[in-house]
View 1 (cartoon, helix red, strand yellow):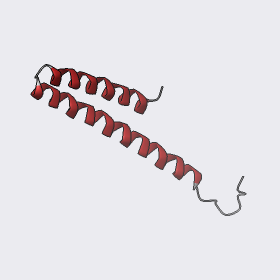
View 2 (cartoon, rainbow, N blue to C red):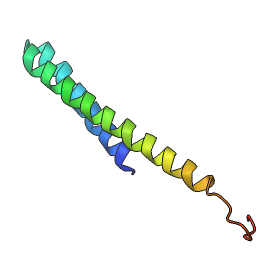
View 3 (cartoon, rainbow, N blue to C red):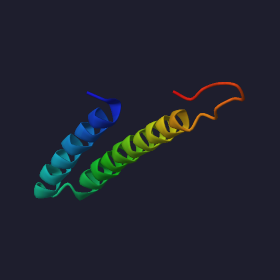
Length: 70
């Protein structure tokens, strides 16, 4: 499992905990859990974006003079 997938799973678990907290009237705690889940999702998005940029950069490597492109 990739790191972004693990981060998203953590976010899902935190959101489930937030729902339970709200059911029990613990609104401040629920808000804290939602904020933490949001941070995990944002981090996963950043990792996936960076991985996509890195793949694109590898695909666009300039061909040097005298070299053949595969």
